[in-house]
Length: 335
Length: 109
Image (tube, rainbow over all chains, first blue to last red; front, side, top):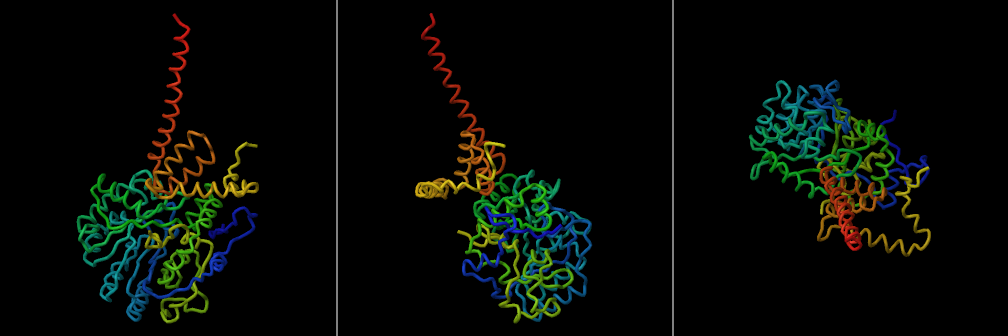
């Protein structure tokens, strides 16, 4: 079964497919990169969780994992081209055997290092010291917590995840993460627990701050809202639940041209566990590589060629342009 | 066949086939009502959900359930709003019991 969703024109026969690029053209827009500020490194699909919305299809049985040789190629590109930010993701990236090496070397090269940390991985064998490791290397953390209540969180991320996440947040707070006046940044991520769009980022952030403080005494810096992408496991859910067409219609109807100039693909390049390059992590999961005329692997990466590149798109891109927009940094248009 | 069709919610604008000027005025008013104002969009979505239940309009229940989720409300909050609507409906029925009592008292010794 295809994991790319056809986009149906509302009110039209199911065979009418809306092209994302055509939508941009209709608004007089074009999607091109303008810089390379961030290298997003997906070090593999192994994860201790198997979340229902995961666009990576990550889980405990996945074996894809970046090898030392590829890690060296990544580090070489960072050094050679003075990449300012590395954004390390997975799976649970901490489960890659070269993860800590990558973080240390990235920091030694002067990079701002951001890790997409699922919180519960710190309870896996050998990972108990992660809070201290992150703190020692001044890593910025971005951690998923889809809601401030147990029922919604466990519904998306698995039974018992909420309780463990709260304990993990306490441990991160205890080493200084997310505290006022601390330089250790801890941002949380809200994903809708179902087939609907995220609320206004600043509104739900206020709710999270109030509830997590009052109920659990937890502090964090910011809440980032991210739209669920209609690919892979979330797409399977949409199909299973009969929400596929309705969700896509919702994304298309909510297309916001103001988001296009601030999409993450415009200043980011994504690299997969084999070293192949993509315009974003979502394209990576669809095996939609960078434009064919460009170098395809990190070993051949050249920012000169990527700085103004044409972004490869698909119907899933409507997920990043709906409403306030969505990116790995949360909503892209904020009041 | 059901009298209510889910797809009709998406076809709402087709009501403008006749007297589009009136529909246009309605939509402008309807949308303006839902923007952030003295009440937040979330509060307004919860009011909409409650009213939808009081009116028992399946289209409105569907639409405002989605609006509430997308405004960040959870099921406890939404269910409380539904109970408010139901309680007021119940209270409105119950207080009419006094009309009944009054009527009975009027003809009773």
